[in-house]
Image (cartoon, rainbow, N blue to C red; front, side):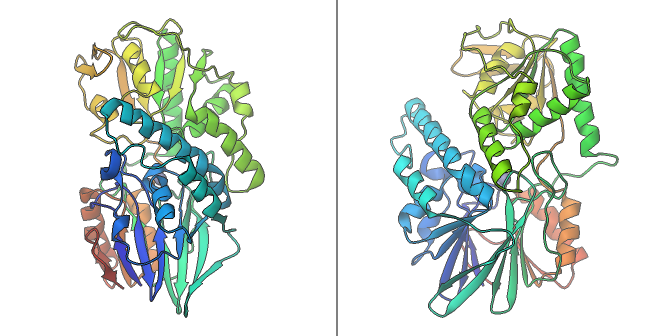
Length: 452
Ligand SMILES: [Zn+2]
Ligand SMILES: [Zn+2]
């Protein structure tokens, strides 16, 4: 196998990998860099020489899916293989991505935007092919043939890792993985037999896990903190990714409410995340890959975000729990707008429940001391931080120790690191070299082919 990481840097960025087996060419994921806009956010799909015979989409986060319409436009013959659940979500998320790019064009004047249009998304929809978990799929060209099988990866609804078998050699790609069960998806169900190659994500490679930490305890801590703030008459803002995290939190709130453990205050949520509740509900009914019932919205009496404009700096007239995207408090998103009404008041709180890049407004807020000044560009408001800001560790990615254990059980001849920032890769390289002395560890240079 020859693989080329088409992400533009050794970072999380835009996931995209070219895997070549003789003349047979596969692309695994085709994401968009969350921190860049326009052409800069694309992976180097322009470097692919010749035609692509198949595309594998591991899951629907935009750092894996966001550039797929351009790849499909350039390689119209290629099928896109995904789990049944993923085939249900892709179109909705890509349509939203077009809307976001259109807004960016208005704001920045970048004439390249949007990078694709509805017709391209429709092409993706037509190319999508569900591969059942129990039925490996043969993909061939000329004399070459591979066997592709999917394995649930936890992480987010529909996520899979994939095994590619070629001439008796086995290559496993984790995609993004979480081994512990969450509310909307079970934990990863990966094979544990030896393989020739393991391509492994390492998102949390630089994050030490702390003793005594468990997801259940962290969830309890979150519910307690929400109740404390609400009982004190404050508002809790929960910035959350629309896909996956928002539905996880809704289920958690619903569970607490059913036990009588949740403050009796209005719950406000809207936007793409609410729309995706319908998609997860449909996926749960059609496949066994997702657990979600949109009844939670009725049980919790979830209200849409009021369109009435509240002047930045002024407290919200309606106190309660605001579950809004984006998870990283990206500018101009609902969570960011509401933060402009939350931060100045000491009875309020912002609780982060997912990964926050340090270079985003959310990351900036997490690093800010009380009394700090937080600028809302475009709203003409600078908040003085008086609200409580706290992080809750409910990641959808595996701990680094779990990844090392997983790698040991596969005992690969070659291990390729991907989907991690430089410090995460460093820890992984060092640790894996000790734990798997017979394995060759690779941290491939972006765009440079690696023969395995
Ligand atoms: Zn992901
Ligand atoms: Zn990812």
